[in-house]
Every structure is written in C-alpha cells, then in structure tokens.
Amino acid sequence: MNLPYSVNQNELFDLLINLAPSRPIFIWGSPGIGKSALVEKFAEEVGLPCVSLLGSQLAPEDIIGIPQIRGNTSEFLPPKMIARQEPYVLFLDELNACSQEVQKAFYSLIHERRIGEYHLPKGSVVIGAGNRTQDGAIVKTMSSALINRMFHVQLVPDAKSWLAWAYENNLHEWVLNYITQRPDHLFSEPPKTEEPYSTPRSWHMLSDALYQYHVGEENEKFSQELLRILVYGTISAKHAGMFIAFSKNADNKYLLNDIIKGTQKWPEKPEDRDTLYFLAQSFRARLLHDLPKKKNELNRAMQYFTHRAKSLIKDLSRINYELAQMVVSDEDKEVLPNWFMVEIVRDLPRLARSA
Image (cartoon, rainbow, N blue to C red; front, side):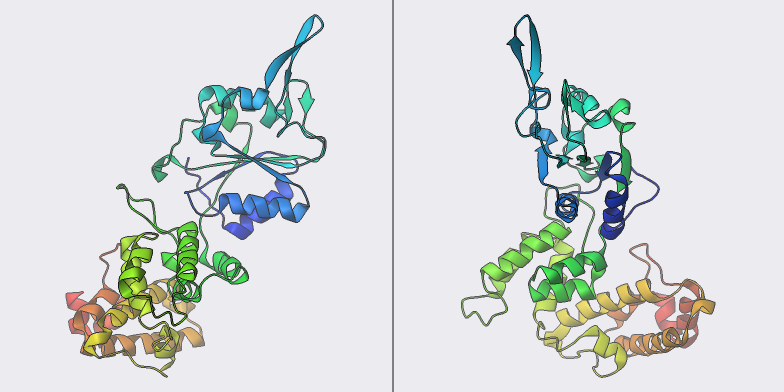
C-alpha cells in the first residue's frame, strides 16, 4: 500500500496518542525505520505493557486459542499472552505477512476487541504494522475486510527526529556526526539484490559495532580494513564509501559548516581526495535541501548562503573540476532550483555548460 500522505516519527506518535485509544491503527513502512520501537515508546508513555505478536510466525490457534469441553458445550480458550486482566497495548507486527487464515482470526480481535467470549480489557490498544510490497519483505495481500477495520498511516524516516533519539541513546559520535552532515543518507530504498542497505536500524547496528571494537578511541588494534568490514556489512555500499572518507577526518578537521562560513577551505592535498568527495557530496545535498524553489523566497541569511555557495563552487572547480560539475549536475534526477542555475550560468558559464 502506498498512501498519498506520510508522517514522520513525531507525527505518528501524536496520531497514536490521539487515535489509538479508540481505533486500531496500522503502520505501513519499510523495514528498519523504527515502527516497533515507536510503538514500544508509545506504550511506555501511556503506562501500558506492550505485548508483541509476529504475524509471520502465527497460526490461527495462536490467536483464537484451543477448544475445551465444559459440560455439554465447548469454548475456545485464548492464549495466556493475549487473555490478560489489565489493559495493555497489543502490537501485531508483520500483520500483513501472516496467512489468510490467521488474518481471519484477527477480524473480531481488531474490530470488536474480542476473541470468542474473551474481551480485551477496557483501555487496551491494538496497533498493527507491516512492510510494503515494494520493500522486498515477506508480505501477503491483506484482505479488504481487514484493511477496512483499521486506520492506516505510512511512516517515513526523518533524520531530525532520529538524531534526537540517537543523541539521547548515546550512539557512536561518528554515526551522529555523519548523519548530521548527510541526513539524506539515513535511509535508502531496499535494493533489488541481496545486499545491506541504509536504515535507522542499520545505522544503529553500525554504531554498536563501532563501540564493540572501540573504534575512534585510539584503539591500536583497529585497522582501516576492519572499518570497511563493519561499514560495508551494515549500510549501503554508496553510503559506506562516503562514511569511510568521513571517518578519515573524524576529528572534524574539515567540517562543511566551517567551509561555508569561510573559516576553513576545501582540502586540496591528493591524500584528501576521499574527504573532498564526501564534502562535495554533502555540499550538493545542503544546496538541494536549503535553497528555496523561488528566488523571491530568499531571506538575508539565505542570500549570504547563496553568495557563498557560488564562491565555493568556483573554488572547488579550481581544485577538482569534476567534483564541481557533480555539485551542479542533475544525474541523480534531483536538480538545483532554476534561479540558482541561471546564476551559475551567468557567473560560471563553462561549468554550467558542461554539467
């Protein structure tokens, strides 16, 4: 499912607070973007225990229970994990990965909050989650009856929200500093081939691996080869290469903000080529993110930034013409605002013509 609107972590949390107590909610989103963690945080915030069921591992009897004869009749006894006396958050993870028979078992639980004669305690909350078909995960078609029983929302990664969480949870400083400079690298769409790719979860794993090997703590046993193994084993290859370049200057010798302010210059030494490539990529990402679509939307601070940007592109072209071309190119289908490109054509015609 693809919804026309998406929400970030903060917006989803607000929806859960306001809607989940009265209606079951289904969260759509790619693997590794924090759906489960956010539901657990919600449960903690409202003071309820969270019971998680993994749809891909369930059979119908795991939901409706097993029959037991009592006198001349029989009744189904729901599992102990579900049949609780106090209110709780029931999290149905990978709900759209379960079989049609299991989906049927969820109908009354989601719509009427009951299983047979057992009713969820008043104040309980039901939340489902699952991946999309294009994510390459295990998904099955969700029945229209089940879809119609839930409020649907699509979660997308948000670097600002994730960084706030990451700082609070003391992730490795290299990961924090890298995503701060390249927020667009927090997430990449799942590849069609079997290979690692970048998600909030994979960056968390990389942080754990860096801590485990005491990387960045003057560890004499640490080597660049080991770093490559750790990085290429957790995030996408494109991001891994740039993270390696970034790590070579983890002492923040060349911070992009300092270059933009004019207190630092582009690195020019041949041995700094990887660092220069990373900074040029980061600079392009900053331009795409910060420059307004229309020139009349420029405030005074952005006017100064625009002036500095053109100057920095000119300086970069003197050091490495190809990287300067990359900054203003449209090869990745993302283009800089037209008004800015007009000024590049005027001030740096040779660069603009070859871009």
